[in-house]
Length: 74
Image (tube, rainbow, N blue to C red; front, side, top):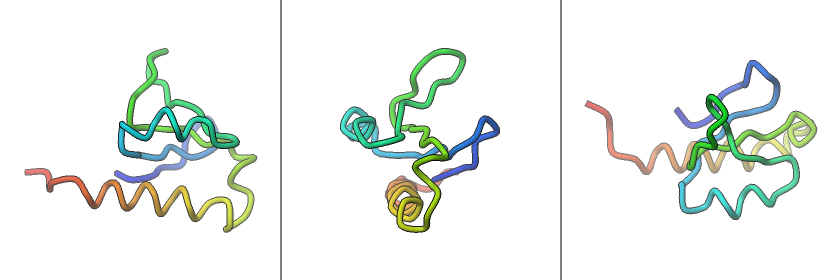
C-alpha cells in the first residue's frame, strides 16, 4: 500500500521511515497514529493540504515511489 483515503479525512501516505521526521514539518502533514501510537513510515495529510492536484500529486508520487522500492511480499 502506498496511499489511502482516511476514514477520518485526509490521506494516509507510506514513506521511508527515515524521512518521517522531516516530512511532518511540511504543511498539513502529521504522524499517522494507530491506537494512539505514532507509526514511523506513515503520515496523515489533512484535507486542507490536498485540495488541488498540485498539493495531492507530490504525496501520491512519494508514497508510490516508496512502496515500489520495497521487496515483493510472498
